[in-house]
Length: 478
Ligand SMILES: Cc1cc2nc3c(=O)[nH]c(=O)nc-3n(C[C@H](O)[C@H](O)[C@H](O)COP(=O)(O)OP(=O)(O)OC[C@H]3O[C@@H](n4cnc5c(N)ncnc54)[C@H](O)[C@@H]3O)c2cc1C
Ligand code: FES
Ligand code: FES
Figure: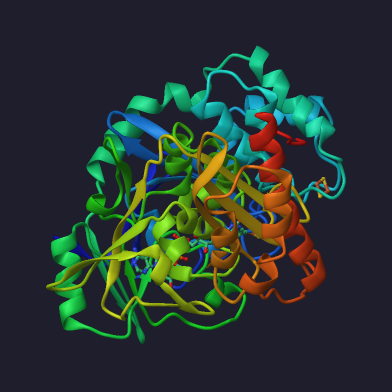
C-alpha cells in the first residue's frame, strides 16, 4: 500500500497531512501550521537545540522517545510516529511536567529562548531512563546551547529528577498511545507536490524498483547533512528517496571476526555496541554532534558525505573497514581505504547505495582514537586521529594510522606507518616517525585551526599514543 499522506500522532491525537511539501521542516510545520510557537528557531542547522522536539516510536510493545532537531527534519519523517512538543508537556489541568517544574524550582531559565529545547531534551532523558547521573545529564543536553544560565542550574534541575515520581501523564496514557501507533503503522509513502517528489520505501526490493525507474534523486538517511541544503543554502531538494524506514538497512550483527552495521543504523544505537570492542571509537562518537544529531544521523550517511572531518572516517580507515555497496543488480565490497577520491567525492555511483559496513575486530591490537575540537561537545573536529597497533614483544608488528581534518579527504599516514613497522616500541622510533606525517598530510588553515596547529596536533597525538601504550595508562583529561 502506498500513501501520499503523512499520518502521525500529535501527542495522542491522530493527525494526517495530505501531500505535504517534502522539503518542509517539522519546525516550520509546528510554528506556521500548528501555530504552536513554544518550539524556537535559533540556528536552523541542528547546532543550538532551540527547536528540539521528541518523537515517540514503537519498539516492540514499548515507546522509545528520541529528541531530534525539528529545524533539519522534514515533515514526511513524522510518518507513523508520535510528535511531542513543549506545549504537550503541561497536563490538561495546568500542572507542569516534572521536568518543567524542576527547571522552575532550580532557576534553569533566564531569557527563556533555549528553555523549551532543554525541557524537551530532558523530557526524553526522563522517559528513557530510570535514574540520571552527571554523565547522562550532560550527554542529554550536549546539543542545547544556553547563553544565560551557565548550565549549572539546568544540571541541578536535571539531577533533582532522581527524586521525583517517574509516573507522569505520558505513563498513564501509554497503552492508548501504543494502540494508536499500531493503528497508524507507517505505509510506503509517495508524494508528488508541485515539482518535488518524495519516496519512502519499506524494503530493499521496493527501493531497487524506484532506482530502476528514476534518476537524479538524493538518498535521505538522517538528513543531518542533506537537509542543510534547504535550511542554510535555501535550495530545494527536488527528488528524495528516504531510506530510513528500510528495516534491512538498520541492524548490527556481530560474529567472531567482525561487526557489520546496516547503513541507516542511527549512530546512537551503534555507539553502545562499538563500546564493547573499541572504547575509543565510543568516546569519539559520544562527542559527535549531540544526542539529537546521533538519534537520526547514520554511519552510512557519514561515509557517503565523505567530509574530511567526518568523525567515523579516520577510525574506519585505521580499522580497515569494508563497505558493502548495492545497486539494482549488483553487489560489491570496497575497502574503505580506496573509497574516498577527492574532497567530498567517493567511488559511489549515482544509483548505488551503501548497504552496510563491516568492521574487523582486531582482538590483540591496541586501538586508540582522539578527537580535537574547539568545544568538547557538539563541535566538528579540527583534527581526528586514529591508531591501530599490533605489538609483539615490544616490537611494532603492524600499524594503521589515519587522520581526519588533515587533507581534502580522510587519510592514512602511510609514510609514518612504514617508519614505525618492525621497529621497537621506543620514544626514538615515534620521534622519528612523527616527522613523516608532514609527508603524509597536507592540512589547510581555516576558522577551526591553522595549518601549523593541525600538523603539531597530529604529531602530538602520535606521541600521546606512545606514552599511553608505553605506560599502559590513559592520559586523558575530561
Ligand atoms: C549540528 C551538527 C553537528 C554535526 N556534528 C558532526 C560531528 O561531530 N562529526 C561528524 O562527523 N559529523 C557531524 N555532523 C555531520 C553529519 O552528522 C554527518 O555528515 C552525518 O553522518 C550524515 O549522516 P545522515 O544519516 O544524517 O546523512 P544524510 O544527511 O541523510 O545524507 C548525507 C549524504 O549521504 C547520502 N547517503 C546517506 N545514506 C546513504 C546510503 N546508505 N547510501 C548512499 N548514500 C547515502 C545522502 O544522499 C547525502 O548525500 C554534524 C551535523 C550537524 C548538523
Ligand atoms: S534551530 Fe538550532 S538546532 Fe534547530
Ligand atoms: S535562558 Fe537565555 S539562552 Fe538560555
